[in-house]
Length: 268
Length: 141
Image (cartoon, rainbow over all chains, first blue to last red; front, side, top):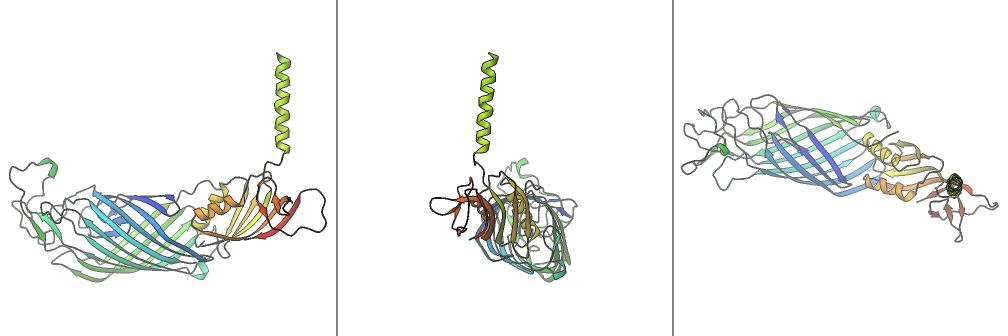
């Protein structure tokens, strides 16, 4: 289980900056890839700049827009997992594009993103899986919930998200079996902190973890409710397709709940 | 010394009274503005809060179904339509036609000038009128 605080500030009508820093609140196996388009799935501090480069308001209650996101992240927490050493991840870059049409009755959003960690080519350090993701969300506000402001605003979504997670790589350490961080990986001790070790000999070679990465598609319902300056969102996504490399934990369901407070200024 | 102080005090009071009597403030009374792009309660709340911050605004009502902002202004406000349209744009929405009720007078160019705001509108001049400021309701685009 993870907790993911995120702060967003819009300092121009079409430019915003967000800071997210999710962290583990329970240990164990966690999925790689990303939790959401705007939230890493491992403990990282991530800064994203969003630029809404297209924006149109063709009619009452209808808006079309497209936003480009770019940013970077760095690891903040590296906890041992049940069956392998934690990977020491290098900083990552992330770019994403989201576009949608919003109206009073129906919404539709599409998005795609790519997160890439450093140090793949040099082969001297751990490397977490790069992730390519895409998503589609269709929203619907039932007529009986189509209330005016300031009554609570509720809409339902069906979201489908797919991700292609690349291979991870671990720096080989003496005593490890070298089979990766899947179920059959049985390293005998965790990797030492890089900053605490000055190797007296050349760094050991790295190996690609066979039991890492794969392709998955999750799909399921979610709800968004806003009232005054707060928003509550929650969703449950079920595994619709899963093609994992080697032997890894199987994911059946992902659950997300969120709470947002908007600082909108003085209101009489 | 006391007399000089009293004289200065009276002078200051006189200046304040004269400034208050001059038409320094705008006399928009009510504005009904159509806005495109409002689709959710948070959008409405954000726009209402931004309009409220302009000053001189007594109340703001937003209809998501019609996209209409109903703004009632306080007497003696310094409100300007150009500022209203700017905050709508900065919130990411588009303002269109408006129905305005305001107090003002026709200037030398035969345009209706809202008192103190410097904003003028092409409005048909009423047939019969005195020299007092007029209260008119008109549409603008």
